[in-house]
Amino acid sequence: MNTLAQLKKIKRFSVVMTLSALFTLAGCQSTQTNVTSVGPSMSGPGSSKALGKEERSYSYNSNVYLNVAIPVFDPGLPKDEYGNIDDEELVEEDIWPQVRRLEANRFAVNTREALSDTKAFGAVNVTPDANVSADVYVLGKINYSDTETVEIGVRVMDASNQIWGEEEFEFRVGEGFYRDALRKGENPYGPIFKSIAGYVYDLLMKKSDEEKKTIQAVSDMRYATMYSPEAFGGYLGESSNFFSNRSTITLTGAPAESDPMYQRVNVIKAKDEQFIDSLQDSYDTFYASTHDAYRTYQQETLPVAIDIRRKKEERTRAQVGAGILATAAILLGKNSGSTAGQVASAAAGLGAVYSLSEAIKTNRELGTQRALLDEMGQNLDIKVTPQVVELNEQNIELTGTAGEQYAQLREKLKEIYDLESTPLTQL
Image 1 (cartoon, rainbow, N blue to C red):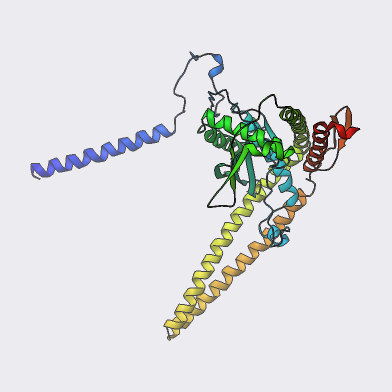
Image 2 (image 1 turned 180 degrees about the vertical axis):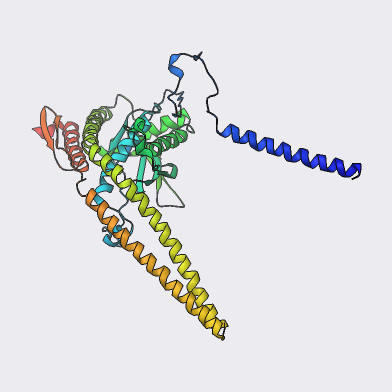
């Protein structure tokens, strides 16, 4: 062997050994702990994190804090052309209304807690709907939920009707979540609400202090205009959006702080805010009263939900296979007049029937599991506690749903405002 050939052989050997060493090192690295620093922390005893915990940190450097309303989430129940709940779609989409309505309330509370943890907003409240007064609105819709996977659509708007952003969030609970005793008290869906909070925070950080102050002013004027359009409506304008039916509210001025009518509105607004604040206790009580039942429901149905997903995937594969075999049967039957071609066609046809039969069998199993989930969800429903509110030294009982109670309060506040605006009517 000549010298040149020997050099080439040595070079190839060196390359192989180098690559082998690199792969070996890479393999070793993947099996090591992720600890990169040891010893006591030099930045204080409180700076260490629990093992396995990666929490996002927030730093809000502003003195302007916007108040946030989180209306109870849209449960995402399918509707027909007349606006009624589509019962057939409920079955097709594996939706249980009792569970979805419960989740609509619970998820709003979860979002409130996650958003409050950012410490970047003023009051953060769950509300019956989006008709309340606030600076920012976080509107959620449950697009999918089966105790394994949850998908939530979020739209963030401000008091001027401007849409800050829209995003869909998805999270899948791991099959081994409930095996970890250290996570016993954690919310299986917790990460999705942290993601929503981080998203809203990022949108907030794009706003200047001047923009935030304008939003607050628009919010105040919209509330005042609701009680007295003739006195305060002139301070607001509307600009149409060419691409949608939504109009944006603009600020054209503001009344003097000493304006008697404006001061009366502020007194009324304080009562309104007090009610919304007290309503949080009702949402928290409802959350606590359904907590154990819902957690049990989540834990017990997680394996069923995982099994359903896998069987759906099997069904899809079976149907695709059946389609391929059926197509092959047709093509073989048309393109071959020989005995062999006819036999192949018949075999492919039999294969297609077998695969479809398996798919139908899988559907029957899914039906049994759907019934199981439905039975578990029957006992989860929403109860709203009546509230007593003191107005002008009178105790007024508000009954019905949270939305109905709030509407009753608004009517009473309007009566008070009108009475104080025209005191002579008392005579």
